[in-house]
Image (cartoon, rainbow, N blue to C red; front, side, top):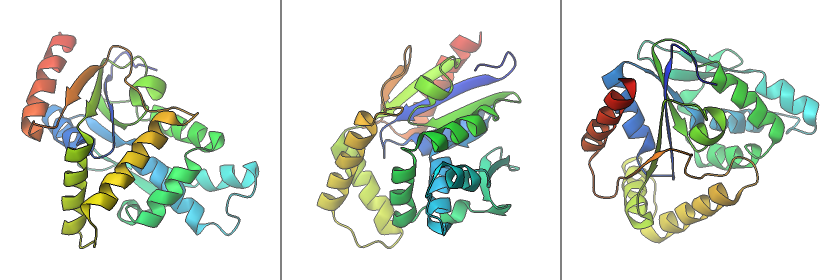
Length: 225
């Protein structure tokens, strides 16, 4: 749902394509609020891991995800809270990621996440980063972008990122993991990853983040006017 006063930019794309980096830079340039939907689904995965019931039925699913909340901070970025405690820093382990992949397929969870995402449409503008922002959540967004890069480039980027965190990983395992994630995202029944209607497609394989943001800002200027 598009607000008359809030300019919405959706940024969808493959894992490791640079969506998060680009979204953060763009949000700062435009002074828009940033919504990272991936963190929302990771928070549902986190809630799953904390649960003694392990989502045994629809009632327990709804009860757990009802404890997830989202709030804008001073940097215009939405942060995630669970039982009124900020949990952003707890959402990036492999366990949480695997858990998020499982629970994101549950319709009741996607419905709850959809409502939270819709509540973010306020203020001057919103950058919505994810995998179904332009197709399902904000289909009437003012500007839709689809960000991708070659699997080889994305694997190299992810390998470097993980090694900086101290993880003992190799290129082959990262490559296979990303390939598996692509196949899962694109072939799932609920909200599969695909290029949104009327989206601008940007390949980041050979482009630096600043150059990509400059390109998007020119698109924004055209649509805004």
